[in-house]
Length: 89
Image 1 (cartoon, rainbow, N blue to C red):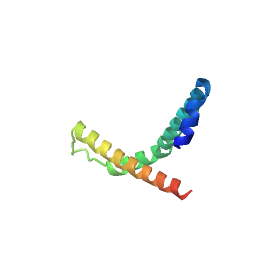
Image 2: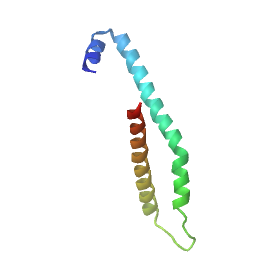
Image 3: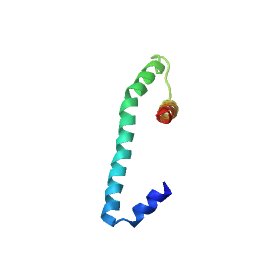
Image 4: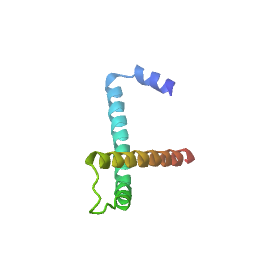
């Protein structure tokens, strides 16, 4: 990897900019795909776990904290699954 970076540094600025743009677009596409494919899963789990009765009232900050905690946990699990599948390739 270090050798590839050194070769890239020796190339003209226009080539380095092209590599930068392609790399940025690729990483952005991966993030968007990850977000889109996990979007449905997040809402399914939220609907199942957030059955709050009408008599029970929660404070907005506690609801946000719970939601953030679940999202963070699900993101960790999804990232772990992604990297495990990537390693199997």
